[in-house]
Amino acid sequence: MNWEKLHSVYFLGIGGIGMSAIARWFNHIGIPVSGYDRTSSPLTRKLEEEGMQITYEDTLGTIPADIKAGKSNVLIVWTPAIPKDSVQLHYFKKEGFDLKKRSEVLGMITSTMYTVGVAGTHGKTTTSSMVAHMLKSAGKNIAAFLGGLTQNYESNLILHDEENEEQPIVVVEADEFDRSFLRLHPNVAVVTSVDADHLDIYGDAQELTRNVEKYIGLLPDDGVLFIQKNALKKLNRNDFGSLTLRQYGLGEGAVRAENINAGIASFEFDYISEEQTIKGLVLRVPGFHNVENALASVSIALHFGVSEGAIREGLETFRGVKRRFEIKRQDEKGVYIDDYAHHPEEIRAFLRSVKAMYPEKKLTAVFQPHLFTRTRDFADEFSEALSLADEVILLDIYPARELPIAGVNAEMLMDRITAKEKSLQSKEGLLAFLDKQRPSVLVTMGAGDIDRLVDPINNLMEQWN
Picture 1 (cartoon, rainbow, N blue to C red):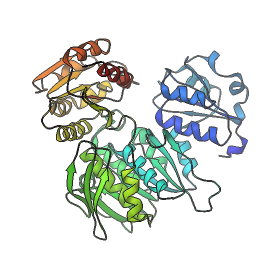
Picture 2 (cartoon, one colour):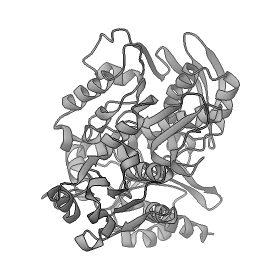
Picture 3 (tube, rainbow, N blue to C red):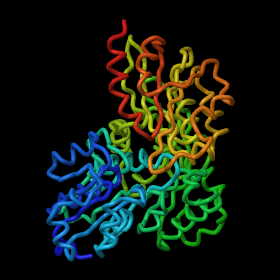
Picture 4 (cartoon, one colour):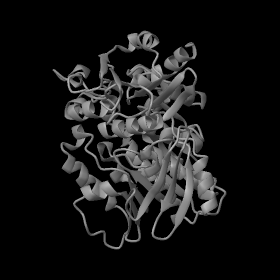
């Protein structure tokens, strides 16, 4: 695709975290950007501040006139998260506009760069953000398209220095949803996990695994694969040809973490590999799962020749990703941590780490299930993972792109949750409920609109004596 001929780019679902990164990239290179999203959010408002025109009505009348008139030089970027009955999507298809999925465009943008692709059903956002920060802080010429807002850069897009003669390295979050990661061209790949998810797309866990193997197959003969040890066990592939294969994990593997110390503000550990040992690394983003993510990140930094000193500094200065183990409050009024966890394995890893940080305190967990199909497919696993908390508060399912399924609701999780205290609450009534309970350690989890309750909850806790 010749970007120079583009008159403008229109995004259907511009407020999505992955979509907005590409929108920012086009805006940066001087191509006018506009788009549609269902609701206004802090992210869409930020895009508007950056000069992008956004509508929140799925009608023909809200499509800018220059988009309709310039069909031959307009690119329409869309995401499968947009409903199939979208008025605007139907119009663009019917009128013969050039439509491309987000993954196609991302693949085109990165096809000419040396690419680090970070895949996995959990951990890819934090790992890709950590890799990007460690390389950038070490002075490497990098770009990054991320699936979350990094706290270090307050963005999901990091731009490389175009005047730098050093070949840019692009770090990309390789999303398995809708098989998007198969559009990429990785030179170095990370696979953080291969747990069943997106079964509405794949049908079963075996099909997901087959597609992860296809993603690994995109690596060139001299490619490098870093894969978490349990993820490697789930693959049906034993022969990786000429690829450089490195497995990593907590306590075992060619690359491993030892002497892990779970502190309140940070986790410390030793990085051990066959070639190198780095003792006493400090990670200020808590969580055993984040230590594992750090193993992959440190390994990639070493692959690109980053020094031990720069690795220590890069890891210790990494501030994390918004809504990934984000400690909102840790004071005399209580502890409040927010996380994007929406899969049983993510919930289990998150709650286990929080309990290790505050072993003597009652842990209250608020969870908003995401998608009817995911809730149905993993109901028992959700109940088991949530039972790690001392008190569980369930909100209604966030439907996202789905229509309701008869008999599938948050209440179906209740019977198998073994926590001493458990209840169903509405979003509207949650603040009043928490005000009565006043938990000492509170966590919120979910990938839906529970994020809109984060600031109100934090503000509420500020008023507690």
